[in-house]
Length: 284
Length: 283
Image (cartoon, rainbow over all chains, first blue to last red; front, side):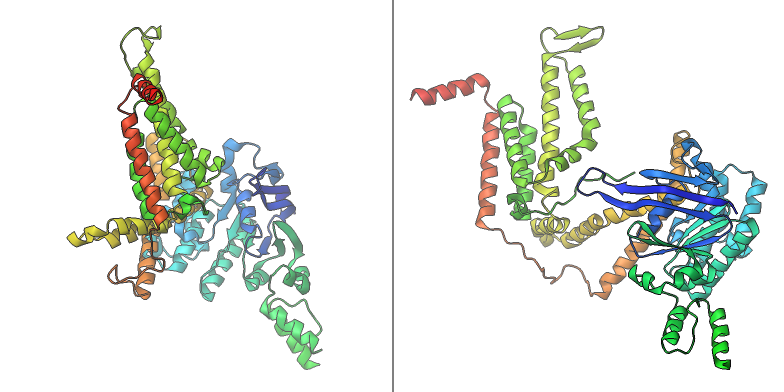
């Protein structure tokens, strides 16, 4: 499959030429294949959020290029709007951006800015609301009357309504209860399937990453520390601990089981697979 | 956007101005403002500038930071100078005349004086108070200086508390504003094009979330304060009690003398000053 996004030798440096010079990102190169979910993990201050704001042109890299389906996003700075509609970015705690009278009109903000016509906007609101699990009743409410989880969904719907080809989400499920997390991530996966979209999810939750991501990008101190398939990354437990990161609890359990020679596999990172492995071990 | 706000920023240090009691500094600031504004002769202005240079050099604030604090006012400074230059009419022939533009000697004088006055005001205020006094010290000083007003039931403590909270939340709200701007930009909001009305309308998606979050923060802060038994100023003691030392009073006295001196310098002309000097030397 083609690469939706390609990051080529990108650096972001603050205070160049002063004693406070700091590289938030240091010569990063990677690709995000179309139709896959990439989980981005890393310790606080490792440059995850900086990377996210580069991908839709909110910030400009000091060096390097970002290619969206082979074209540099900074090729035509005047058409940045178009890029931002193609690469949707959902910030941390997006519910703080809600402003309109009703949830419906708030979701319509993005599509309206794109200059779409009424019918198309209605269609997109419907679609985004479906993926985010918002009912008709909730669409008519003021966004400030909603509960925390519903607000989060309304805000994500506001970005989905632009129907982005690439969707970058910074901690989409942070601070929600387990059921809320599940529903939001499930909805996003469905959106990805339906439109062949590419998803980038920044998260601290190894469980969520293990469950939903196809690939993992591990960042450390402004550089790419590791990248690869989920299995490949979680098998290198030692290296992850070096980056001050954790493993999914189930993987940690299996490492302990291996130490006690009960179970041999170390590539376990989902509960479903763990169940099979345990049954196998028990039947032996 | 909103990144280069240096005005009103505290730079920790150990200079004379940092060590001076904040209440004394406020009194010094008042005296300073008075003489900067009254200085209208060359002699008085020279003395004012000299004193400003003295203050700046004892503050130990880096030169670059000072430049940064004047920079945002560059437009105002140039504008004032130009207005004064072209719109002051004087006696005698203009120095320069071209069609309706006439420049008089007085105009140049006014422009230069206004420029020096404004720069001194900004630099002086910055080094006496903003750069060398933490916001907490400042509000404490105001509360203490206005203390006598408590007798006539002015809620001085409450005002001081509100002020310190307001100052504390400026950087937080700036950060929040930047976040909201980014989030709306990511939804293709356009703040840079269109006519004035469209641009004002474009601010709504920023202002509403900002107000909502400010109110939310205020409620959270009020709860947190109540949980820690805050009940107003009555019987509240301070961790750091301000104590003016002898040195502080001497500093205040020196500045008072300078003020009086500038007051006199402002009254006499060059020839009188020269005559005065001659009298002293001939004796």
